[in-house]
Length: 116
Image (tube, rainbow, N blue to C red; front, side, top):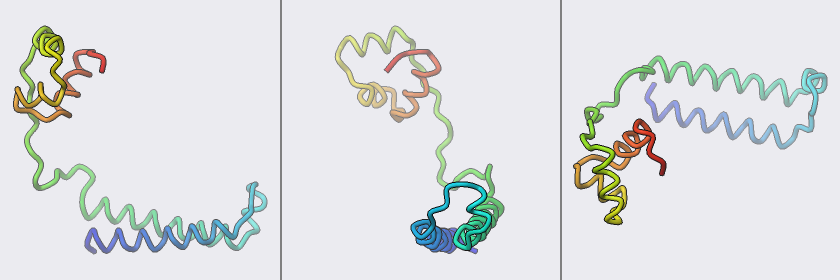
């Protein structure tokens, strides 16, 4: 089953669950055990879970995306970073200077305990 087919089935199931939830006024576990809407919602929940598990099996939870770029290491010192900030450079500009993405720069900042 293709990823798009799984997503479409998930959407269909979620629409059915939404429709049933709007009909249901249950607030306690006792009420839900006797409610036909709640039982049907639970069945759809199980179907959704099976689809999610199938998706994990088909695509692999630890499989890397085909077009993933290799991890980039940012080579910059804290003092260099602070010097650029004194020059009123934005993180986007600093990242461009070092030819890395802004997310790579953000990760570097977190690793080096530099506040936003």
